Image (tube, rainbow, N blue to C red; front, side, top):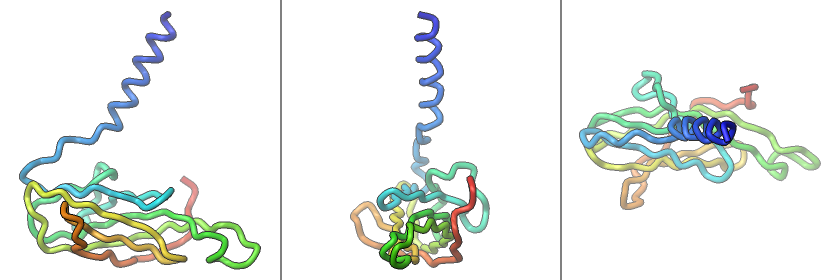
Length: 141
């Protein structure tokens, strides 16, 4: 019985770390939406590192979002009889009109060896595209 109570207590603590904070209505909130089995991580806003890599939350106005996108290049794009190749890419996206209380969605994916990321508003209108800042193989985590 003690083991069951301890297991429940420990599992509930792990779940707390997964909860997202409540968005500030005075700022814009940007959700991260990687495409497929990939990893998209928020790195910086206006070249300032972030404490939480699960989302962006910015003041209204103009900002540059820095992100890291990890994905695999399929064997068909690498070469005959090859294995999939892991890519670790840095991207930046600039947008001039973030609005307070608005929700945005940052979607990322890869096309062959090239990563892409696009910013959408709450009406699914594309607002901006990211620029690739460099890629390499995935380093050991």
